[in-house]
Amino acid sequence: MTDIKPLYINGKRDKARRYVLPTGEIISRRQYIKIKEGVSPESKAYARYLAGKAPKGITARKYEQRLKKKAKKKRKEKIKKDREVWGSEYHRIPQKRMPTGGERGYYQLQGTYRFYNMKYRYYTESIGYSTVTKRKYKYGSPNYLILRRQAIENAAAKLEGYDWKYVGVIEEAWLLW
Image (cartoon, rainbow, N blue to C red; front, side):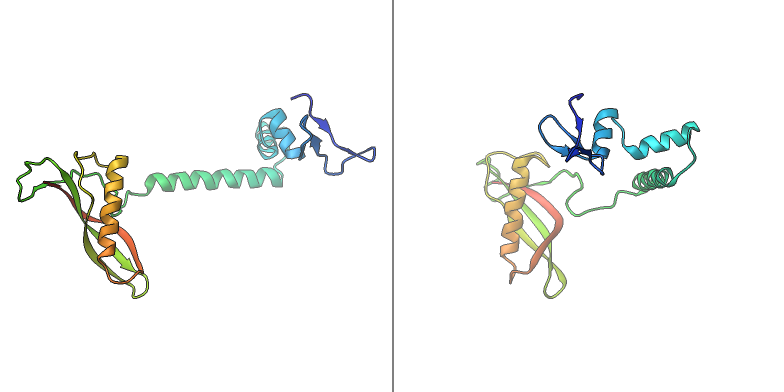
């Protein structure tokens, strides 16, 4: 850390007061202060103002505004209610028996998915199926998400045209073969 040296150009100190790291990289004065003191120049100026060592200058005023904006944004995030997004809710997926009565013990994900047509601007629903697996996966696991992706792609393939955008899940069920 102490090997950081001021930059000299033609024997004179650099006008921008830049510094040179031991690796040869040139850094700004601002970066130097952050490395050396661990705080930004703005927070330093604001701390001096709070301690009463300096009047409230432009830097301190702007830093204070930034802090207020951050606090306001945090409050908004806390107040914001969780809105329902398609397919993001945690739910237990029901199980339906197929004609074999589940004797084979294979599972397949069946889902009704909602799509939006970008060209004609309307919504539609389509049913899709995943490949058959030996076991039923937990909601949200990587394997479950792969099966869901397969079912979504299968449902999208049944729709006419290519301008369909996946919107969300309407319902899903495990088919027991």
